[in-house]
Length: 178
Image 1 (cartoon, rainbow, N blue to C red):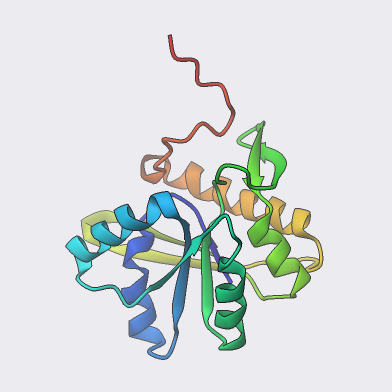
Image 2 (image 1 turned 60 degrees about the vertical axis):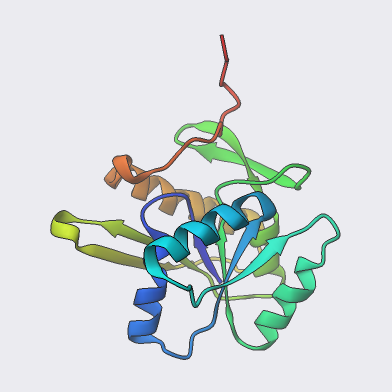
């Protein structure tokens, strides 16, 4: 399982995967709201994407698709920094203040003892991109420990690349429209 966030340029992942791992099948897990927008963007920039999508649905049908992908030894990719309406959440600190995060990816990995990588693709100088993949090292049975490690990794990336964090999301519920 790959855990990423809305930082950097994960849309370039297919180039890194195809360069190193031709056989890797990647399933991007996303909400219905994100699906069409992201699919359209990826196709406009990179052409037809080799990355498959699994849409989170209210009827929970996505669970069967994720289990099927795991049984085929395919990769699941979650941008685990945001949750959708009615999702179960954990509250943990992000940049010094409490924020909510989806339980799903962290519980799925912990309960099924799925190896996890924290993955980000960040732009450097002269259109060079750096692929970061850090393995989770800890108690794989603890979703909260996995979340804390993920947030530590995310905070490190935000501090190193603050201008590549696409945060248009009210993490701390402090948006006050006047």
